[in-house]
Image 1 (spheres, helix red, strand yellow):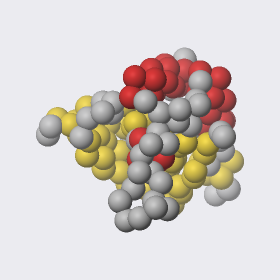
Image 2 (cartoon, helix red, strand yellow; image 1 turned 45 degrees about the vertical axis):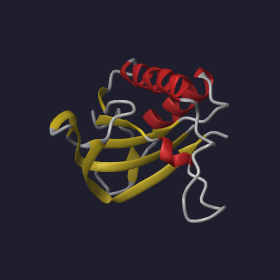
Image 3 (cartoon, one colour; image 1 turned 45 degrees about the horizontal axis):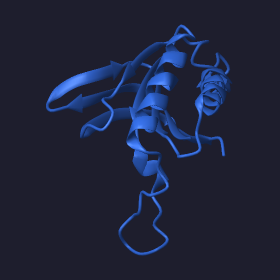
Length: 146
């Protein structure tokens, strides 16, 4: 499982000209699922995500978590995180998890985040999505478990 986490002041996702998810201050999470990933992988990453101290405290230091600031999450499925560009100019996505399993783990990941009492919005798995964000910092972090 691979994630790209962006600290945002706001973010939204649109499908077919309809906003399906929108947050204020929080984290935009692009989530890719690999073929070897399990619920245990998701559990590990959810715990890292909700405890990751990347929001500034009163002294301007990155010392607060999403829970500390009562922030929000926007979680987007992103199989292209598994792109392999070594063999030419057209990426291969054979390293990504199969859609059925990937969707199951994507939904599981979202549910586990909700169980942490965080407001969670999401995209639509497999849809053509337009994502808008205002990156705060900018702060962008790669988080994965191999």
